[in-house]
Length: 73
Image 1 (tube, helix red, strand yellow):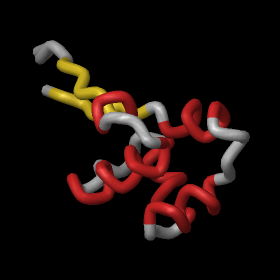
Image 2 (cartoon, rainbow, N blue to C red; image 1 turned 120 degrees about the horizontal axis):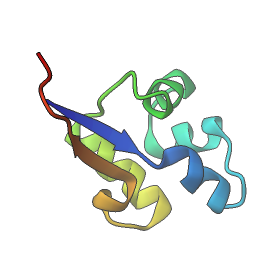
Image 3 (cartoon, helix red, strand yellow; image 1 turned 180 degrees about the vertical axis):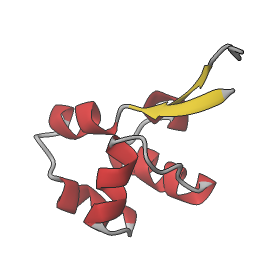
Image 4 (cartoon, helix red, strand yellow; image 1 turned 180 degrees about the horizontal axis):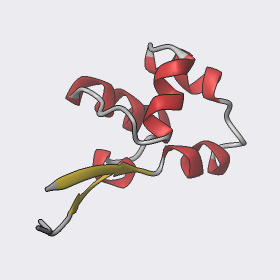
């Protein structure tokens, strides 16, 4: 199984303590979407992932990381 992790919270604070609302407005989504992303409860569309990366002016891979997990039975 795989899980998508992100660095959104850290990136917001590294960019002048940007609020969730500010990021949401710049990315064209609601604050609730940013909250869900930061809590890893929501996987963004590819388009949204690119929008968020562009807000921070970095590569998408610097925002989102795919973590492989072993299947345990």
